[in-house]
Image 1 (tube, one colour):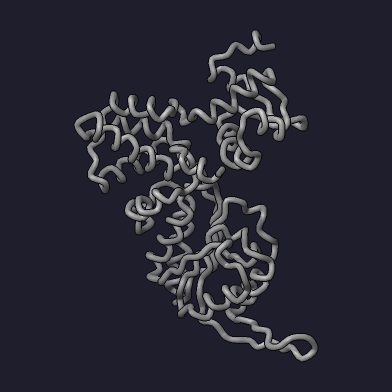
Image 2 (cartoon, rainbow, N blue to C red):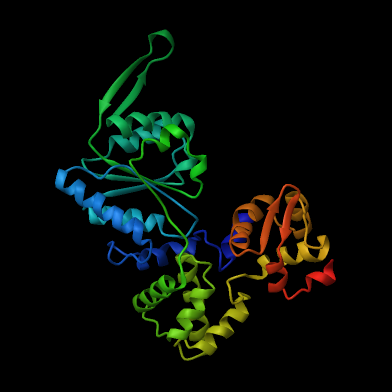
Length: 339
């Protein structure tokens, strides 16, 4: 239920089923078209050009960062830039070592294997992946017990691109096998406006510059959220207006969506108000906050809390969560009266 509820939030950075088709149509194909992450693009360009000169596949790449920042998109860009075939899977989808062995044995020279949520690979699966990444070999155990023996099959040279939101959960041996590691940062307003403008052209949406800025401000510094908000505002303008996105209609759409000027929705504000009203700003333990707000612990921890902390509205202490002065100000609550 928690996942379904989270997917319904228009400002959720996690991909919903409705996003997949939209994201694919808006996905840039080259480093030139990829907006933002300039340091990463520069380094990747050098790595790709060097690999081409050596006539080798690019080294294994690890991309980590918050959901919705473009890790999957960047993996496809790397594949396009290197003219490589890309095969896509995810950590949870590879349940057994045999599943990974089947994928690896079907790779061809220069292919890219993209593993999303790579931190969720099972340990036994990881152990198959180690020699495959390092020696381009697949070790298969034949038989059981004392008569068991290992058969090594050579694999073509290939590249693993791993993506994760939780790099700290990757085992050290797996992390060490990536030659290229990049952290994707949150986006600033100017880059988000460029993304919104580009997406609007692809979707054939007429939008003014003020509306682009308004959507960018509410996008939680995340391209996926920006594209989703653009789509929702377009829907409103097509039903309630003339189909063109103007600033007035844009603001009306955000009122209906209950998304405020910095991208907080009703759930974010509810959690902040629970801390303010019921616990005088905190500190309050995570379990208690979950019970009082009606939200699950994992959802607060992984979905709501990161952005609230990033904006400086929420803080952690050894005793629990604290609503900051900035958080009180955003809710227009007088902190001195509360105390």
